Length: 180
Ligand SMILES: Cc1cc2nc3c(=O)[nH]c(=O)nc-3n(C[C@H](O)[C@H](O)[C@H](O)COP(=O)(O)O)c2cc1C
Image 1 (cartoon, rainbow, N blue to C red):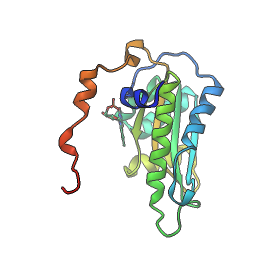
Image 2: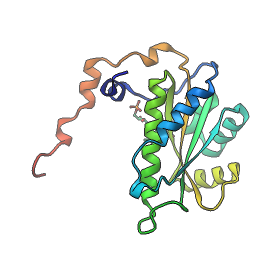
Image 3: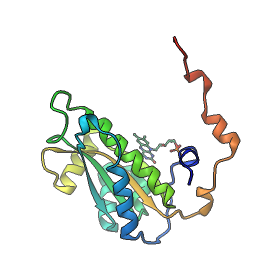
């Protein structure tokens, strides 16, 4: 898909079919995650990939109701920050680097025909703590977000947005030129 079309058509998809995802597709998504910019090129992210239904249900339990798309996802990627790699003078850049990785993976997955939704984790302490426990993460690894994915249950979820819907998303009053 053309890059601009991909970006403007992407939307969150929360219902998935049971069609399995091939490993080469998973690899491409992860490659996209590791292709974004990061502060001082720290590449201070890490990913926990699961295609195990029981584990995804545990992730849902760890995060609560808003993470319901995990209940029928066929792939979940926990995006984490790695504090051992983050920029020593401003460690919190890890949060931005992880977000970029997540967004790149979301777009790549969409391009590969996979519906997906970003599930917020950081900075909600309880979700962070629960996921650290669930995956037995080392001290330097902080859960940031989850991408729940799967081939869409309903193909209509992937049809391009109408031009009208795209126009609605463009809010001219958010833009300021030369001065506020
Ligand atoms: C930081 C962040 C956290 C989010 N958390 C959730 C979530 O927990 N559950 C959910 O269903 N969607 C979640 N979303 C998806 C948003 O609800 C969605 O992006 C927004 O409603 C806009 O819809 P769209 O993605 O279809 O354009 C999250 C998105 C972001 C960026």
